[in-house]
Image (cartoon, rainbow, N blue to C red; front, side):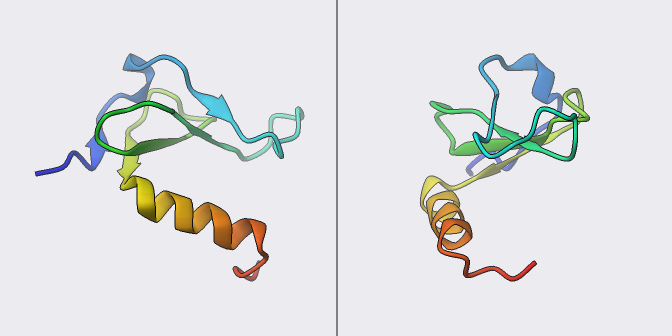
Length: 73
């Protein structure tokens, strides 16, 4: 079975914020590249909380939809 949750996301290093994130400390998500089970995603304001792990293909589709404006606010 593929891992879906990382209980303590702070246990991993190399998290990055989107280049679209502002520097004002607002709501952001962070992703971790190179994780073998998929793409971990965490809340930047709660780095010790769990991270969700998405299948790479699903994450790629989501990012493409966001970039293309397919998801209404």
